[in-house]
Image (cartoon, rainbow, N blue to C red):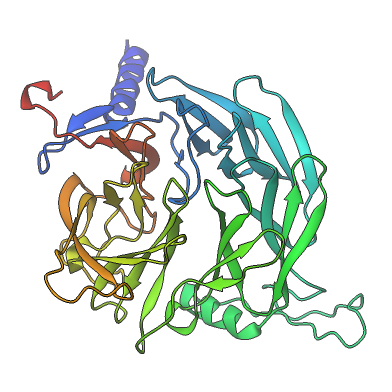
Length: 414
């Protein structure tokens, strides 16, 4: 009898600690659902492609690999087992691309077919897959220069090459300053997915990071100069043959910052967080590649978000908010937001060189006051544009959630 009572008590505790699968947020009236069952599961970084090419499946990570969730049936299954780093879901095929044991691979989520593409260069990484799944792109530090780990001799370094090794930083801020100042020689390269052939397309002593292929143009690659945002010209594009190196945004005032860039679904516009100056005035800025038009949507301080994203038709934006410790120092910014863009009518001078100004009209979707923002929610719209997907630790462990864009009827509350 006593054993039965203990088992019942343990079971009741486990059930009580299980996060809800669905609820109506009392502060917003929007339905929220928990998509994943595995503690420690997470959706992708906001600008990675986290949906299979057919639009049916969400790709997510677990402590034991990569899984997919059928967005209609809500059925999940594992497609890659083991410790891996997920790069992207393909936009043309049903493949997911990932790194395991120093090599890049793909796995078809439907058939399970798996193939090793290539070994990575020494100190190399892969960050992105192009639109037609013919190329990968990444970076590596050239020679024997090191990122972190303290000083040590490098007897294999080529004659005359300076070897740099960085001391372990105390915090992220020191790490960013230290790494930027090191001016380590870097190479940007592509990998042919069919043959595994690598090709260097750009070299620099700038800190090259956040590579992201256009979702539409297989030969267009966006990347950043990493570092403290107020000290770098962050945003650039380049063609996969190494031509067309272009700076997308130029600073117009001291302490102006921009970053957390992402593509529109049609590949025509690059969107990014812009602050003029840092922590004071907030914009979502856009640059259209074909016309060179620039748009800036203004935001209030509490509406600033760590990351933004856009629907496939470009009509709605979303943001994941931020706590008072973020750059906006928001007093009430811990929300998942929906934004409706609104252009400001031009009743003055019509000049094609002018920026096109607008505002983002905010609607709150989810109260994130119990979320610890050391974990970034990383919002994205589902392919049908009806839900915003995000990851959260609001119940302790990390899970993937989604909030419905349309407001729920009160009688549907569970």
